[in-house]
Image (cartoon, rainbow, N blue to C red; front, side):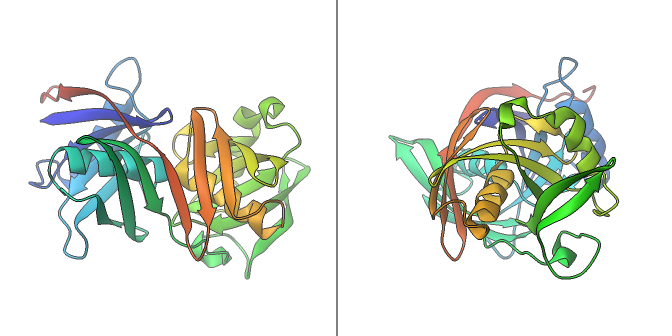
Length: 277
């Protein structure tokens, strides 16, 4: 079985065409854990499967490195779109992708026949706690969250998957590795959450680090980037066109009725999976 190793600003994925369902639903969680293990296997933040769809051009399934299935991934969908176009699965520069968080539209920029950047409609944020899910009712906008006796101001939302956004003064110096997993597994989030740590540079720029649910800190997180922008915009900290600096590079987000995420998608190498993997 052939695969591509890909990344979006260092957020890396193994992508496999599973339209013939060679990988069963019972196998995929364990396979994701084994393939994503760094040093001992291919190594990645997640596994993306190309599947058939009855409601869109193609379907994307996303599995984190711990085997859990994710609803949506902004960097992942850009890699996925490039894979589908360059393998002639969906030979169109604009198409629809079915995900667990709904149908997402992507627009591809080409250099000859190679996809260089992808713009994705990430949908509108949902602020209701029940959609994350999060304990309590209504919204959680700039409210206190007690983490080991210390209160953090948090803004929580769903970008098809759950996010908790915390604004900090200097994100480079913030102990993401210590606080991230504590917030991820906080009792307020029954299905855990992604955690974004955000520094506002000016009205048009943010610096973001993301602790991803099921992965740990990654070099980039598309939905986390969108969540950070949505929260900052909601609180009046930024405008509608934002450049976001993540560890792996820069992403652009436009705030309209939906959030539109633009950035690069790269193929690293191709490989073949054998049964003993």
